[in-house]
Length: 288
Image 1 (cartoon, one colour):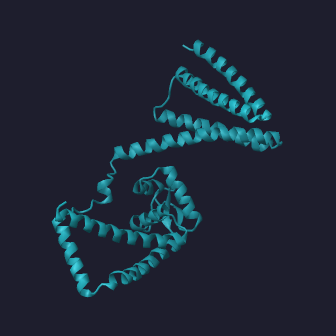
Image 2: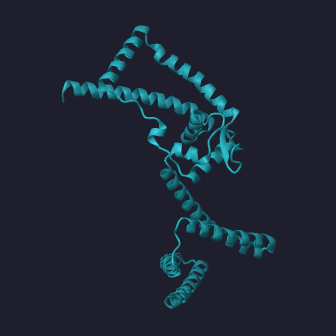
Image 3: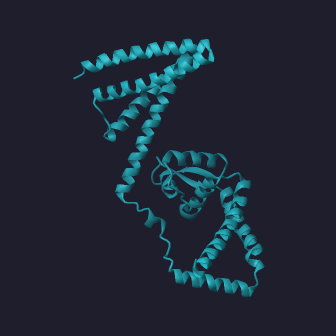
């Protein structure tokens, strides 16, 4: 290995260690305030780009590169802990804008003081001559490496209509599947409510589940995901086959565990699933 290569590796190693020291101090400042790195990163983007008006969930998601549902949950936790607040948008009352609270503003003021203290304890230990020499050397290294100007966020993430449309479609699809997941839970809760004579609650749960079905279907139609009845029924039969295989595996497990109650229940489910399969298979053959 040449002398130049050895020196380059040494320089890179020293720079990595210096960066690690800065990151370590950063974590020490964030963790005591019960913030995760992702949460603090969200606050930073709101601080840098949100201004007084704040940002919408979608805008914050684009900055962080996270899905709408993930950012929504992240903001819920930040709001719960008093770091952010949702306020209605002045130009569109249907939208909320996420803004920093006084608690967050104080956090960034404290960080500025912490940063001053940090650099005093690190760079401040070098003499003025050593600091000047270090700056001169690093500046020269930058010139030699011809490091380009770091692109702005807008350059890296252009907000063209096509990009926004694709993101909207992906989030709508995610919303529809989330609604489908909640439908079964609502029907199960409705049945439990009826067993406990909570008939009004059961009626509300069934009504909401029906509306969730309608919403999901409307979203799928909007996205052009509608399928023929025969295709959809074929997919259902295939899914039922997978479920039946999983139940049969559970039957084997229950037999091995000698758990009589579970075994009886699972055997009944197997018989029911086989009956469903016969029904749907017969219907499938009759559909044109």
